[in-house]
Image (cartoon, rainbow, N blue to C red; front, side, top):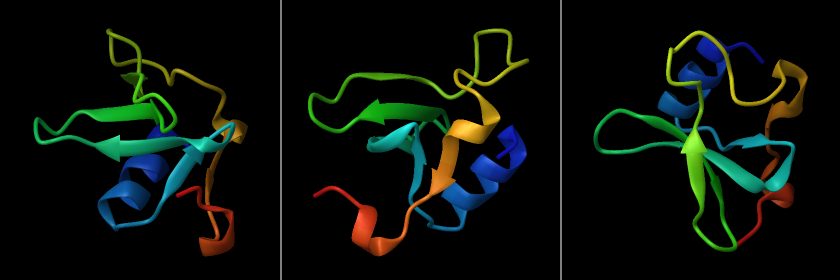
Length: 71
């Protein structure tokens, strides 16, 4: 997924993951997109500080089916 596709999917209410279902892409109240590890709440930005590239490979991002979502 491209950066724009990820942002659109998150904004549309889809659950977007990076690498595996343990990492979830969210948008916080400051309109920042974050990749969060659900087990411990650790987070990094979706994109680098310059805003020029994803913090992960495009092919590692996916929209989860409801059966794949970790609680």
